[in-house]
Image 1: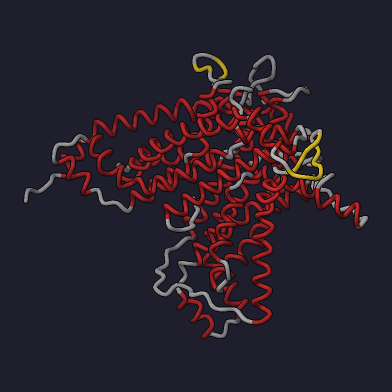
Image 2 (image 1 turned 120 degrees about the vertical axis):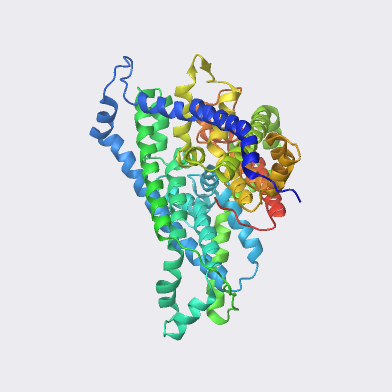
Length: 557
C-alpha cells in the first residue's frame, strides 16, 4: 500500500487554509476589533467638541450618582451568585447522590428556565407581584396584607437567582459525574461523616467547575439589561445607566456612555482572565471507573429533599406558566379583566407580526453565518494549531463576556458613518447577533472535531480532492451532529436576545424581544404576554429538538 506523505498534503492545503485564516482575520478586524477600538477611543473624547481628554472618566468616578450604579451592580451580581450557589449546589448533590422521582422532567424544567430570557422572568413576576399583580391583589383585597414590592433590589435578586442557578446545577452535576465512588468510600472508611465528606472531599474536587459556573452567573446578571429596566426602579445599575446615557433625552452623551461601557468591558475581561487562570491552575482530570450511583431515600429525609427540589423547580417555571396563562385573559384598556379570549393574539398578529418575522429571518441568517464561521474557526484552532489560530479562537470567544448593551453601543459607534453606514439596517442587527452568540456553535464544533481522526480528510486529498472539497465532503459532514447541537443553543440565545437589540433597532427592524419590552413599558400586558408565549414556545421546541439530537440534557459552554 502506498504511503501517504502528510507533509505534502499539508502543503497542498496551505493556500486554501491560509486564505481562510486571512479572511477570518479581516472579518474580525473590521467587525470586532475596530468596533472595540472605536468604543475605547470614544470614551476619551469630550461631548460636542470631540477633544481628547479624561473628562468622561473623571466625571464618572467623581460623581456618586454614577459610581453608585457600579457599586449596585457588584452588590446585585455578588448576591445573585451567592444565592445561585446556595440553590444550585444542593440540587446538584441531591440529583447526583439520590434517586429523585421525575428526574428527567425536573432537568428539562431547570434547563428551560435557564435558557429563557431574563426579562420574561421579570415581566412574569410583575404580573404576579407587581402593584396590581395577581398575588399582590389577592393578599391586599382578601387578607389585607401588603406584600413587599417586587421593584428594586429584592425583585431583581429573585428573578436572577431563579433564572441563573441552573448554571450552577448543570456544571456541578457534570463535575460530580466524574468523581469515582472509591474516593467517597475511602473518606467514609477514615471516619468522615456526611457533612465532612462533602466539605473535605467532594467540594474541593468540584470547586474549579463551580468557579467557572459562578463566573457565568456573575456575568449574566452583570450584563443583563431587561430585568433592571423592567423592575429595577430606584436601584440603578450599569446596563440601564449606560442605556439612559446613550439614548436618553436628559443630557446623555454617546461618548460618556462609551466610557462607562469600557469600564464594564475591563471589569468582565479581568474577571474572565482571573477565573481562567484559577481553573487552569486548580483543575485536574479524573478517571471515573466507578461513578457515583444514586441511592434510594427513605423517611423524613426523602420528603424534605423531594420537597426542596420540587419547590425550586416550580418557582423556576412560574414565569413560563404565567405568561402562557395571562396571554389568554381578557383585557380592557390594557388591564386584565375576568374571562378569557384570543384578543391579545389577534392584536399581536395584526400589529406586531413584523417583529415576529424579523426575529425569525434575522436569526436564521445569523445562524447560517455562525455555523460557517464556527466550523472554519474550530478547524483552524484544532487542526491548524499556531499562535495565530489560537488568538483567533480566543478573540472569537471574547464577545461572550461583553455585556449585550455594551456590544450594541460598540457596533453602533463603529458603523454610524460612511464607509460602513449600517445603523438602522437589518444588517447591523444580524451582525450583533452573530458576534454575540457564536460561542455555543464554536465550542461544540471544536469539541466534535477533537473526536474525529484527520485520516479520512487526508485520504480524500491524496486521491485528488482539493482541501476545500475534502473539508466540505468529509470533515464538515462528520462535524455536523456536534455543530447542529451547538447551533440550536445559539439559535435559542439569538431568538431571546434583547440587550444589544434594544440599542440597535428601528421601527422596521424591531424583533420579538424588543416588542415584548416595549409592550411591558407601555403596560400593554396582554399583548406582551402573547408575544412572550410565542417566544417561550419557540424556546421550548428548540430545546426539545436539542435533547432529541444530542440524546442528553447537557447544556454547557
